[in-house]
Image (cartoon, rainbow, N blue to C red; front, side):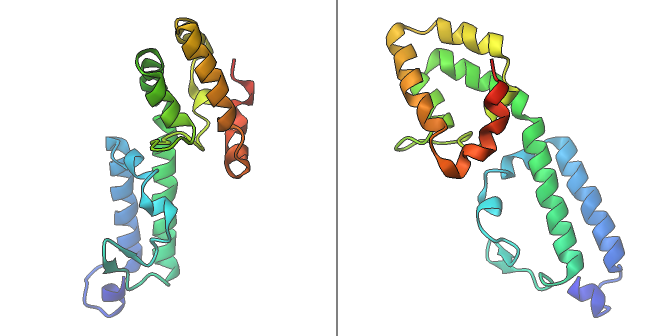
Length: 167
């Protein structure tokens, strides 16, 4: 945008914004954006730089507008993909309870993919309970004892309210 302002780039800021939105939309359609939801772009203020390259125009409203658009599309893409991810999670419940738990609660060495994501709101309750009932009794106890942890963290509890109607 700075180069456009200085007439060193032939396109106007409006054209740059339009092209950036179109590009972001095409990435969303391809399914490329969903992977960035849990990345560092959401965990730190990457409105200043990315991978060591500074954003010269970061204080301009047009830049902030396109960055906000990108973040919204990443989040939309991620949540649109949750039903597919629930199927993968259900497979883990059947095959590896420990990995399943590491994805939904805070455990030492866990991945926590869905720690603060209301994944159960996107899951078919019948499929879940069918898989749950197929577990050994010791696994059921382990699940029940550990699932309490999911809702014990005040900082993420509000994010999980959608799960209140699960089952």
